[in-house]
Image 1 (tube, rainbow, N blue to C red):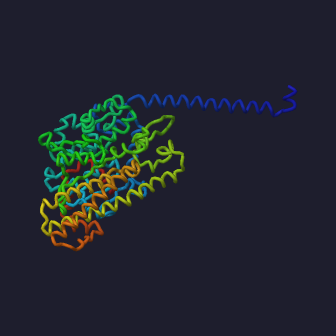
Image 2: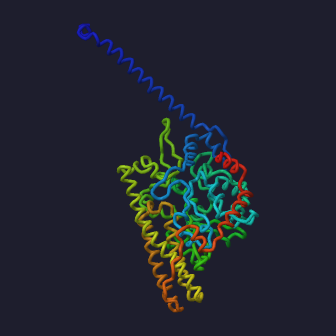
Image 3: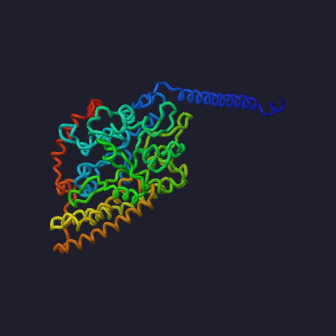
Length: 494
């Protein structure tokens, strides 16, 4: 009592402190109960999912956080030093690409992809899948749909894999409408990661590997490897089908795949100018990733492009699949303690050096195509041109492998630098052979470099009638585009 007499404020202090403590304990208890309730809510399925349910919104009823983060991929505002998530006309940026792909669909149209959310829309819109008014005669095969939608596993299950690969691209236009999503990577019953595209399983089987024995961490890259790989359409194995095949039988580096293609005498197209039997690299992101430091340290694709995040006390995978440069805190700084600016500067430094040499290789290959055309014009024979054409094929394959690997200068800058270096050597040696042949044929002057300063000039140089192509594409789309896409486009305009 004497203590209280000397300190009359003490009882009030103890009273208030007790109230605050009780209040804070109440908040803590409430938070714990709420988080438990959230966990219980999230883990109870709300919708029954079929084996190959293609509609992402139905999955979203059971997994709202993942679903909502996935649909944030519709945001295309991010831009880095090199590209980003918005549509970029790469032929406008670099008209030399038109010459590299002369005689192939990419010379007509090559836009940077906007990401998974837009996969169906973008493949419908590109001139590369266009054709005459009769949509069934469109040039691209059905196989081109393989990586564009969760409707693909459903159709493969319903009709069979080989049957899916048969016919023209346009015949499935009304069936494939859902953008890339949940069913592409997840089992609807367990939510375990699974492979839904048989080409990856078949490629590993031919190497004597059982993909079903992969760890969860490995699967966090393998589900990406279903599509972000080099591939070709095998027209010989299954009658009438453009069977999707990965050229990994001899190995997964640039030389091994080149050897595989050369041995089976495969070509994607014959170059319109040089007449070289060309290879078009698709997007060998997984193969390049395997040669880099992150793969060596056990880092998966998802660790950087789909890192974990917490929301409402729940930890989950962020399905906003994007460049790590747009999410450095969760993607990079989990392991790297440097400041954000330093990490981004390091990435750009690697990209600057790689792209500087890649552009040099690109110019050399363009010149080789132009000089090879001149050699044909002045009377070169097929025997005289054989080695030269293979040199052009191999040099451009290396350029395309580096350019199409999507992040290769980050994933494996040492390997990509090596690939470009060997490409430069091959291109220079090929041009020396061309110079000697031209001299032998009586042409001792430098072959003029064409005026290809713009996309339009480059397309005119290789003989493309773009006005006609755009008209045909417009008619083709009107016959093909599903009604739901037309309605969505009308809403966007309004």
